[in-house]
Every structure is written in C-alpha cells, then in structure tokens.
Length: 338
Image 1 (cartoon, helix red, strand yellow):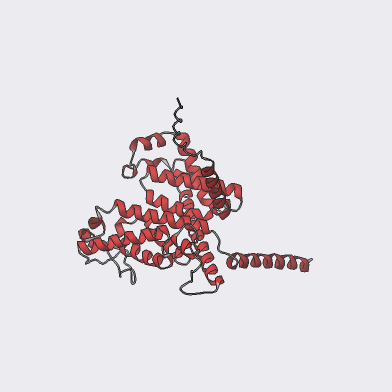
Image 2 (cartoon, one colour):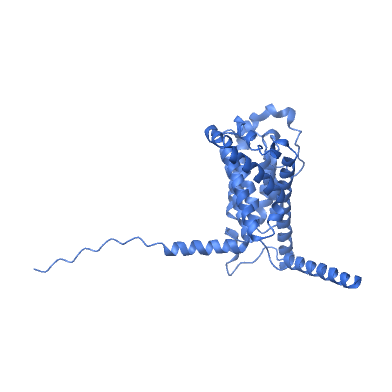
C-alpha cells in the first residue's frame, strides 16, 4: 500500500514537472496580454507626463528645490542617477523630459522594445527619484513592471517590431537559441503575475484586519476624502447608497484575497477580472487616480488568455466586414431622346 502511494505521488510530481517544463520552454505564453500591458503602461506613462508638463519644473525640475530636506528619503544609485540630475537647469530638464516622452511613445507602439524598455525604466526611475513625495502606488507599479518587461517579448503582437520581424529579409541582431528567449519571456510573465497576486492579497488582508471593512463600510470613508474627489456630487451619490457601499466593501475584500484562486477556473476567472476592472475604473473616476488604475489594469491583462484575444480580434473583423458600405452617389438618368 505504501509503495502504491509512493508511485502515485511520484507519478503526479513527474507529470507536474513535465507540464511545467513544457509551459516554460515550448512557446511564449500570454503574448497578447503582454502586448496589451505594454500599450496600457505606455499610455499611463504618457498621460502622467502630459498632465504634469506645465508644472514639471515645480514637481521634479529646478523649481522643486523646496524638497531638499526629503530628497534622500528615496535615494537611488547608479544607473538611476544617470539621466535626470538635481542640478539640471530648466532647458536641460525640459529636453530630457521631452526625450522621456519620446521613449514612452516608442515603447507604446512597440519600436525597438528590447532597447527602449530598459532605457525607459531607468529614465522613469531617474525622474521619480527627484520628488519622492510626488510618487504614488501607480509609479511604483510602473517601475516594477518595467523591470520585468525588460525580459519579456512584449512586442510579439501589435507593434512595429512585429511588422519588422515579419519581413522576409529580417535577421536578428544577436541570434540566440529559441528556448532562451522563451524561458526569459515566461519567467518574466510569472514575475508579473506574482507581483499582481502580492499586491491584491496584501491589500485584501490589510483590509480584513480593519473593523470598517469587517463591518462593510470600508468604501464609505475613502469616498469622503475631499482631496480624492474630482466630482464630489458623484462621490456623494455613491457613499450615500448603503447597499452599494456594503456590497462593494465585501466584494472588494473577497476578490482581492482570493484573486489567485479565482483564476484557476474559467468561470470564476471571468468574474474576478470583471470585478477587478470595475474596481479600478471606480478608483480612477471617484478617487482621481487614473494612472494608478490604468497601470493595474495593464498588469491584469496578462490573465486573459490568448485564445480570448484572438476570438475578440476575429469578432471585430467580422463586424467590420458586415458593416454596409456607404451608398455610392446615384448616376444621373440618361436624357430621353426626343
């Protein structure tokens, strides 16, 4: 009996190891999800840089010298000190800022992502270190995810790099065995997923310890903070609805704590992702944190299967084909012969 049990256990372990090896080495997984993640993170970076452009000197540039006592709180070492510096003048800072915008555009459209991604990560971290008080969770998420994306092939879909690789005369600059790139890609994907799990589970478990979330009123108080209410009337409409606050509070904790488990089956995965997306849209609208929400939605895109993306693409193509063509102008009637 013991021998049979050992054989069953070793067989199960062997099958699990084989399945894991195939997943790591056979093909690159979540190629559409990582491409969507690249695009959305790029949009989040561009949005943040755009809305702060007029105040860039006071947030990070020469006008931010009032932050001097706190600049060592979040000090970075090389290479993160190699792009933006504390002694940059207004002209030099603006030029570097615009170059950072150009890097974000190149990253978003998938141009030379193998080179652009690490440079963008260093430049973003170099900028953010100039004002540790101006960072939020969204900035931290972007920096962490950019580090992981340096090792993933985010340009395999929906990118200029993909178009370049499709040319018959394409030759890689540094030829490597296919399994090397596949391994790094899939390990980076695991790192992204693990980071998302840690964020949600830490947030959910922290909420569980608070009496407000245990009593189902956890959403009420953040919605009352004036600094995070771009539309106070909308926030009031939400937090005065007791049923919505109670259901939303408990559902938020439930989905965050159990998020990894909910992804194991398709039915619960769809519900979990819809709930998470709705939560982040709500945070963006009612708490004025659009770039944080967009960065988190970007990371969540890797949990949507490639088959789902492909089905959505096919559906979109069929929808375009079914659209009726615009009627051509009517030809004039031929004149009657007298």
